[in-house]
Image (tube, rainbow, N blue to C red; front, side, top):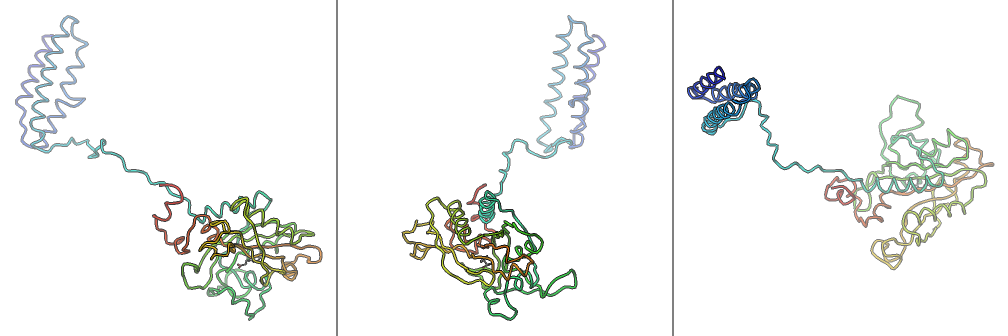
Length: 347
Ligand code: PHE
């Protein structure tokens, strides 16, 4: 004990006489006396070597020393705007930044739902290139060369490359029917597939038209496929996509690759057929084109048109998303305005 109290006294002297005139000296003082490895802590550690009867007294003396050292330290701390060297400078008591979680894009929501509905009745998803050759986008689909039918879909042509085995001039695909040509060329019936994807048309951008948009096209080829199969499949789709009381209406139309061809309207999902500005007070909204695959298209793709028949349909995903969410301007889908996107889930 005698040795220890000498040590305490000499440390007390050291504490009192330690000269602190700079921030660095203050830090040295802290390290020497007050840190976990400092000399005062060391004295506390020695308590176990003290006779039990003397421990209380010893503890009090060391505590007193510690208080004196702390007082001296605190008194000078503010003066030197002190921060300990090991401080990270981070204030852990500040409230955290909120985490922003993303939201699904309304086009992805509609596309996923369409895929889900057709997957349930056996359609598989197929994919193809967005830069397409003339054969797959037009010629195989019965668009004769130089025929005005090609003007139905204003096309972005791209410079030809020497790479790969392409057939005819290259363009950004104007519809995903091009994927269906590729599927037919490489598979024999039965074929039951849908091809979702982005398509491009050279149109002025407005609330109702855009130079790119998204489609899902469907194709079903087997023996004895009839127009009744097409109609029933589309009725099933409309009821699943909108509501079970949705009605459909098929109007005769023209596409080079289907015969007969039709456009399908659904009873307006917004006003339930009463009339509103979405259905232009007709009670009906057009959502897709369809028809029986023209035998010439089957033959172009090496499928025997005497043995097989099939139907095809194609719809714009934006159109479906607009009806689902009451969106009235196509441009909103590609402007990436967070105020718009946040409405579909997430923060
Ligand atoms: N490919 C057509 C379009 O983009 C849609 C369609 C597909 C029509 C299949 C009939 C059959 O407009």
